[in-house]
Length: 363
Image (cartoon, rainbow, N blue to C red; front, side, top):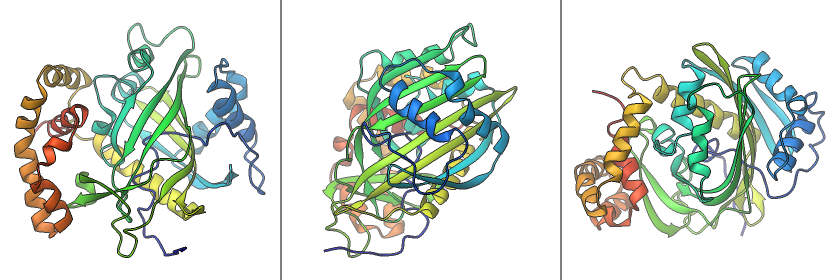
């Protein structure tokens, strides 16, 4: 049975940009439209050769860097790639490059802390890769030579705003810092279709990024509880360019997702998801009371030193507030999950991330 329906803004909002990824081992041709000058070659180099071990060639990826540098906050379509529609969005982050990299690529700052609107959890599975990220921002900075960090990781998404689907997937990743360009490029590869989506629930407003997760397969949207949906293809390259006390950023994104071999993602969905990402990450990183990365690292070490039982005990007041919100929303499914020993379903990393989020912004 094939089901078609119109998605409001949000179908891919929870899926796009917490990772930058590519369909496995296929750096295929662009679609029928002419690509941006040099873009196809740059994507093939990054997502194919570099991801699989070759040294990055700055000359071959110069077109991507030049595009981000020239486009500012532009938003536009991209030629289709790997049978997926695509879009680009630029934006600026008012923070020094070194400080931003310390927030984004730090084994002691969980990514769900900075991107709670899209990431449920993100864990490097290659030994040493998480720690290797420190080379991107530790002193003396910037590094005198190109820095490349490779590895595999497992990511889980938050609940999609429109369908309630949550997805887990294995990724290959590469992070590249080019000191001569003061540029960081983040690329990763989804190594196969994601796991079947499970049901998750947003509590309160989107800006709060508070979610409750079930282990039940399907979607929460009416009439689609039975759907076995997956992320099929996701191609993205994130670029960060240091410019004094600001960072010019840009994301090139392609995506397919759906069920029964059918993709329901349109170019407009990707554009909306990129716009949401710009708004949400800006709200976190530009918050006046945002704790310094050094403070977050210390908080992580303190929480990581506690037992699982103590972490669950510390989380009880937060989950009580979640339950109260679920009751205000009259979200019966979320209420049932929260009343049924929800803290026991959360792993250690999720508990630490939950507790850190409540202290991310100073009162």
